[in-house]
Image (cartoon, rainbow, N blue to C red; front, top):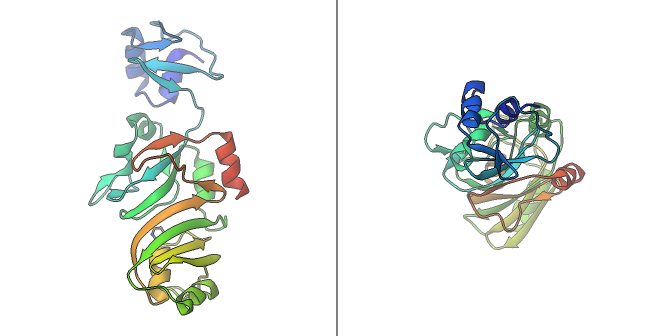
Length: 234
Ligand code: URA
């Protein structure tokens, strides 16, 4: 692939902008600036740098963000900043999207990708991927609430009850809830239907993929093959 196409595919702007970056000697490989946009480059395990900042070539982007509160999972947010404000601009340019949505006040594991099939598969309600949440509740949890969550609660506007795959108390006001669907405000609505209220919500896991313990709030990282395998396998 020529260097212009490499930069273009990785979200460094229009073809014209990519050519200009290269012609201005701002792009290097292995420390050597390459000023010819038509230079043929082997993309296998390629890392290039733009203005000295290293960037790995990835045919498709799969990333995890530790979403902080106060950000919307939309490129066109209504009341808060967008999660894309936390990411390099290249991701939005190359068409990266959120895989499902977390509410603006929900924190934790958010996947993003520019692989349309992947985004669709993990957003689709048909694909029953367990998602594990930690909810802080306003009122103390009791057995009746936990049983209702496990047996199924009827959400406003729904015809069939929705049951949690698992519901455990981790403390008086700390609930671990595993759900398969990705309905709008699902956890908050389920907890409300069980007679309590969510005060804070954090997603810890999707499938077998846990939010990396060392990923700070607001930070992101690439997912590798083993992460994607864990996601599928969970
Ligand atoms: N359930 C909710 O209520 N909110 C989220 O952000 C995710 C799941």
